[in-house]
Length: 332
Image (cartoon, rainbow, N blue to C red):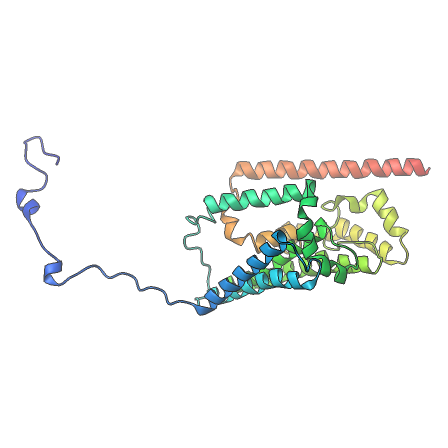
């Protein structure tokens, strides 16, 4: 115990010697918070998710006697979808509408904890395998084979698998956004927008076009983001494809690139596309919502991002121009 220069204690001995037994006077232990009532809906939904994960594991690791059929597809992805949507419904339906970020800066998953690192490494590894070793995804590709045959009339590949998983994430967690931000009209409409563009224009329609022997075209992407859409080879392929649809695709891409994008960006900024149309923004606004607080917000990061954006844009413009000059020279 510290003392004063005169040698006396900071707390007088009488206070130190004071003793009071709270329990003896009937106070007892402090009251603890009442345990939250169990939510049967959450428990059932979690069980459905568990069954979906089990079916997925069996399909990927087992002998797969029903490979390429609807049964493993529905048992895995169907149960996962139903369970996750049900979990979001029961988790938010009885809560007071409003933004809920309690504990988000301390969560193991949402703030660079061990689970977050594991998820990050797993997702990065998935992309590495997707691009360089797709043969290791053969069993996963077989799971979506019936859907590919139904939509496109062609065998599934790693890109169909990726597009399906991507769209599935946007749709499922888009429903979660409905529940989480049901008090906010802006969020609801924006979520509907990104779900529509991803599900219809970036997934269903391109594969239906393949089934009809038409060019596979993504109407929600255009130059310079989809940089090859205005390359001479792509334009020539579309214009010379049977029917008028290919020419319309070129017209659509040109109008969106040189008229719609500049005008809408002038009035609304890049958010009209990044937050309302783009598939990347769609995934960020749905699945990525719990992690949006981790986005770098410093001036330095903004300057780096701006420099990279303009550098890539300049590269695409120069590449497109060089290809057109070369194509014109060869044609002459």
